[in-house]
Amino acid sequence: MKTLTLSDLETLTRTDGEDWSLSHVRRLLRLTEDIGAELTYDLHAYTIAVYLHDWGAFARYQKSGIEHALRSRQIAETDILPQMDLTPAQVTLILDAIELHDYRDPRPVTSTEALLLREADFLDFLGVIGMAREFARGPKDLVACYRRVISRREALRGRFTLPRAQTLAAVRLERLAQCLTWLEEESLGYL
Image 1 (cartoon, rainbow, N blue to C red):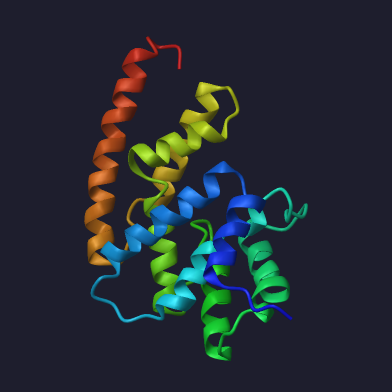
Image 2: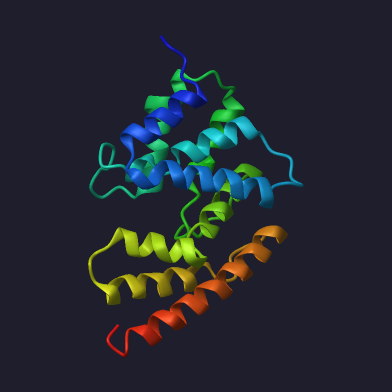
């Protein structure tokens, strides 16, 4: 049996995912360089978790009634990780980070890797990029997209624990507030 590599995961993320998936992974990895600079963690396991964390949202893997984080964990556990050269401890880190990454999950994280993935993912839903992501998801209804931006902002506000993530979140929240003000002004009351 072939052993999958990070390069294979990148290729699969590009081919099986939608256009947003690989750029999202790359942003999370870059954010982690910043917010995790002073932390000790398993970079290899973490990188695998970042690649796999949203696979359950890909059309190819989605299952009705199963939330994307749990579905991503299932795919990783049964289809991907058995084909990779990992220790049992690394597998546990990866699976837990994937399952706990979603902002709607109130459970505490269980590792530095899970904390990094969660907070990097949170950051990618704030600021201008976060607003752009919400509007890109559609539908072609400004009010619905606007409400989702506001809802996610409120759900993420105050959730950051890593000092550098808190600093970045404050900047992104300020930028988002300015963008929303401009959006409201330019909508002329018809948002």
